Length: 460
Image 1 (cartoon, one colour):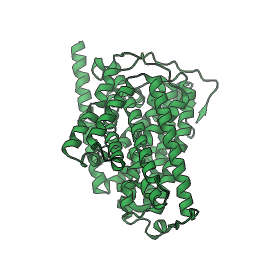
Image 2 (tube, rainbow, N blue to C red):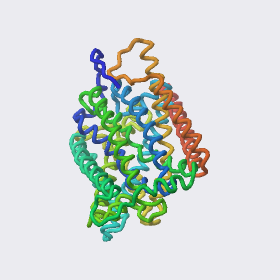
Image 3 (cartoon, helix red, strand yellow):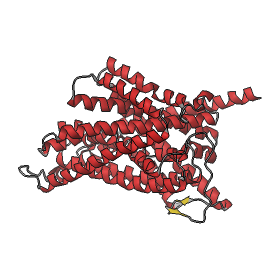
Image 4 (cartoon, one colour):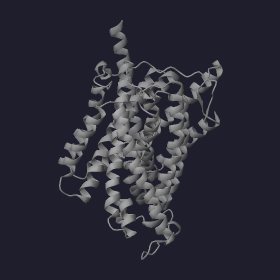
């Protein structure tokens, strides 16, 4: 993407939200929301489903997210808004499309918040089996609700240091993993690349298709950068820098980490339940497995923190546009939508009760629930960018940030997305996810349409 120095900087919408988030915080928030349960837990599930061929799933999903982030960056720089792609879909395709994708993304994050709280609690319990999982998850939900009510400046700084810790841990993991594979660790035999070359795709294309939706979940949340742009002082500069940085770092961290795990641990290894710890335990580094597990806890909590922020801002924007109850757009304290935060964490608290009643069954169900919703959100973003960019070019509107390779890259992203849907329908499990997602979208769209008609009738 390129920044045009002659472009007029767009005015920041007067939403009442603060604009004190710094570029470094925005960048780390993008990393924080994406490097969470999907990497530290989902990578093991992906390898178990597809074997080392899960790398194909990561490359496909990674290519798609690059295109989507470039498209979102162009739109966010031109129109920084806490509703982000929901607002862009409304401008491109109408109010029903905008409100539907906004509510879909909010529901997705609400589920992810609960999954990350339970995932972090489960990992912590594995090294400190004192407090039960449901109780730890409850503590996490209370703590991060409080953090999100403290104001965006404090939230952004907290998220920055959270993300720094897990990025450093992943870099250390990659270094240790490389040393293990090259046989540089004293007294530890290298596993070599036999796991990669011996049985690359044990489950064939169906396994790759099943893993793809686990991987999509892993990359989900990266789009939060476009939501947070509304609370930065210079969106055009901040968003462009954040997207460039987030995209390549995520690809290095994800592809690098999964390569190491797939090379070291067979697809039927028990170590895949906590893959990072499994690799480090095999490396024979005392305490490393426990240490990385604790870092994984931090990573999950960081993602929870960022996703709670994103969910609250999305429902706040929906409320501002008259597509959600009015009380959700009221600001309190440090320009924080307290009610929006409250409704966004409610399901997380419910999930802790469900974990108490049905131990070890809630997290797997949550992880399977949201994979394909990311695809719909990304597809809507690409369609919106295509329409809005064509409109801007036709009208001669200057854009502060322009996506390179338009319209080829946008069309390529949509074609890749269509291919993923085709592959998804070839697998029974992922086909069920897709059908469920489409039914959910239809229900949301109908509800939004009915709500708009009721509001119009009352106004008349």
